Image (cartoon, rainbow, N blue to C red; front, side):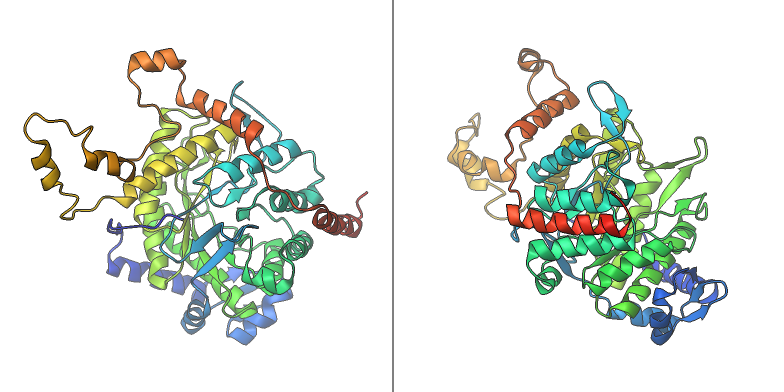
Length: 483
């Protein structure tokens, strides 16, 4: 994918501030610990050096244990699509952009209403993500409400395996579903070894702030770790709600929760690749709601990216999001401002895209606009070169006073390499725009959405592979006592 060229990294924190935050996180894990109400990992953690209060399910980590866990973790990895040329490289100084893993509502952009999503919405979302050139990790975008809750994860992952040749992401809700999903991935990849070498997906584990793990989350972690599949830890600490009101304190707590996850993983599977999911937020005290588009969101994303890089980890940060419910001026400002902070600080994965408001719903039209915004920002980050050739002295001399550079040979040869050209955004003069339909960006995005759904040809799994995957789903149904 796109590589950062020459812009310097943004540094929100000084080296001394990074040290203070890191030391505070270490003290939390040593003196307070985290709650892990799942015995499956206790023995591994004891062997690794952690101490466990079994009566209260509290696990504490010394500085030595934390340093060992950080040191053991693999800090570079690649996830691959069914087409192995389609990749997301983490820890390689490249940007990766993913659609939402799944929302419980979907936005009808035409009627400006929300509704429950269904399996057809899931398939449409995957088709659009498979097409969009700047979304290199396809998100499921929705959790289909017409599928039994016990089967939503495995059904979603089957549709992702079948509908896109890119790496992908979606939600996994329990250990049994995780096991079935891994089995389907093995079938599609051909073997356990192939899946370990060319994973489609990195598991996303979300500690519950403050300082707690769900038992189901630990089950999911164990299944993916044992299958040698990379893991991302991403707690969503909210300043003033599930974390301290001070941004520095929120980052301290977020960091502690992620570091605990890194140690748990290394106790289970030493050397397993880890992505540091630094995604703290704020709670808006007026509304009582989490905010996705606040200026503090961008500041914390940049700071925690810098902190994570000090340990050497690839970073996922929640930037390019918004609080606005539909594409408008507010969404554009919030998305662009936070995405720029997330990119210039050096994030490896940025997203999730196509979300309306703070997890208010998936919006496939917004996903198409986000794809264009990402292209814009990638061009910003590429900057430009200053060389003997690019200062253009010979060209300026050749064209001379009162000349025209439009038809000069240098312009004709190099205009495509120097200027970014939008597919969706409008640059025409008023009269031309008026004649072409007078459509706004969201209206043009709706047209693009319609064209993708009509014209894009997906590369689906072969019939035999589909049958084998469906056998896994049927086995899971029986195991859960479903008809």
